[in-house]
Length: 319
Length: 268
Image 1 (cartoon, each protein chain N blue to C red):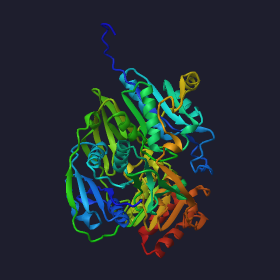
Image 2 (tube, chains in turn purple, green; image 1 turned 90 degrees about the vertical axis):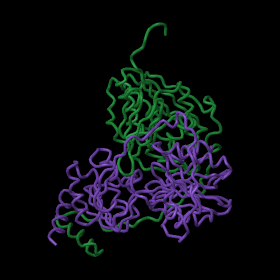
Image 3 (tube, each protein chain N blue to C red; image 1 turned 90 degrees about the horizontal axis):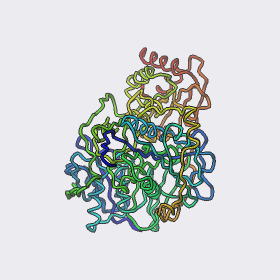
Image 4 (cartoon, each protein chain N blue to C red; image 1 turned 135 degrees about the vertical axis):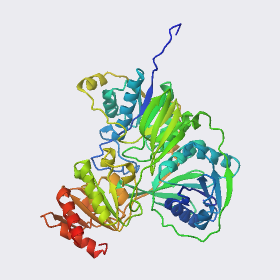
């Protein structure tokens, strides 16, 4: 089937569309000349969204509601009004997942998450999902009629400007939500970070359970700072409360593709590997020589991070 | 109820739990159906232990009520449910039906939402942010929509104050404080609470706790399995393997190798 009408969930941070948004718009415009971005707020980002391929913007003012139920309800009203997309693309993150879940029930359509690619053969729309830590790629074809709902992992597509004009903005109001709308944001907390952003850094130094205890994470941060990189973490030490969630690399956290990824005391669980396997160069330090991380490392050191990290730090400081 | 006035606030919580193959064992696909193999012994998904613990704590704090479990498995497996019952849950509904094989996330949500209704609903429904084997991560929010409930996903701190939920909801940049009326549904992150280990007494008691087994037809959910899935697997391929490089034992001098590696890439 032809994809004549594609919608993309767009998000903004500090007044600009996120990189995941621009990646999805770039892919969407390669599949269709009719790409609509829908976004929370007033649509102030229409110029940048248009530049990357959006031909229309649906702006949904959601106030203090969580985006999931509010935006899904607004989109349902647009679809009921006769504007029916063939495909709706979401970034694989908190808000994307919530909206697509609510919408899937409203439309009674399946969802396919965690994808890294999409193709339209004319006979069917197929998405590609990595499983088992990315060792196996599963292609899944949507059956039946659209809209097809699919979520894509960050960095699946390269964002490229199309030089498009600002997209026309249509405001869409949120219908009465009844009981489902009672969840309200009463305060927003932003955790302060310094240095480059984890998912944009050229060098990432990440620590895991092998560090032994929370204070040892300071070594990871020190090395990251010396290399002008960003510190990251495995899910195990985020769950243990050593570092905030914003540090997490992996399936449930950030996807990183830096020039150099240094894994310190990380064994390489599937959940972690999917978030860092795309790094250009991987250095791993781990006590266990059987650790799966060595299977993807360009340079693997079987050793104690408590010995090796301080030596590297001292050597860099001495330069 | 007569003239007796009830002042104690009871809290009934339903927790969705998934029984999965041991994550320590390497995953495999069934060659015939291309679905994840789930035929061996199944255990309680670690991700769900947090929800069970959270439910037990909320009921405890409310001064009464009970924690019920719902689960779906094609093969009648109850080992994972027994673990959660041993932690302190009171009863469980297991939707077990070979026809469920191949069900997509939406069908799973329909089944679990019907199981919630079979239990008469609850003040709070709790799910995990995502399972440790399938990672789809949409089922709780889909259930909320099916049940007409408000929802707060990615909850990392949860309390009930004055009959309403107060949740710290994890975000990309930090967290949001969210309030929400009950009844509601939340999905909790790992680490939200420290799951207790079942005591010996708990394990013994769990053996006699009621687990009701029902089929998809009992819940009036059709179609299920492959027939209900709006998707079909069209290909399975091996990804291009990343070549492992040099692995060396640390002799006290290997840090120099790393420094040299960084030098070669001109980052230092």
